[in-house]
Length: 124
Image 1 (cartoon, rainbow, N blue to C red):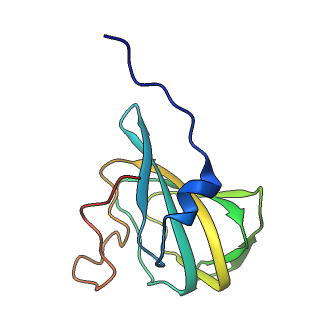
Image 2 (image 1 turned 90 degrees about the vertical axis):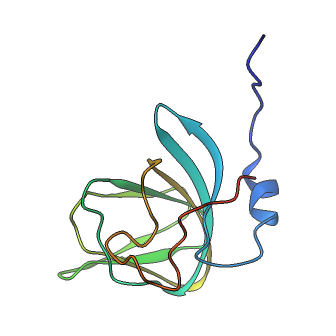
């Protein structure tokens, strides 16, 4: 049986996301997941003990705050946050962001009791 191979239209997938800070899975490869999320406002300070994260801005922009600096990520740019580094994404206006990270990654990292923690993600 042939695998189901289909392209993903990011604009169509983002149009299906009505909320913020709630990632959806749009693809998987080699133990990694491709996720989409809309950012608005500040997230929580957190870190991931075992996973690196890639944030690619598709639309809008956001600031990635670190304890010693802030990096602004614009459309067409990405930022990799290494495991163990405390960070907080903040979007002053809505941003559409593609995340690429291991399937084991929980969005709030070390914050296991946050209202924003999502352990079981919807697939689009």
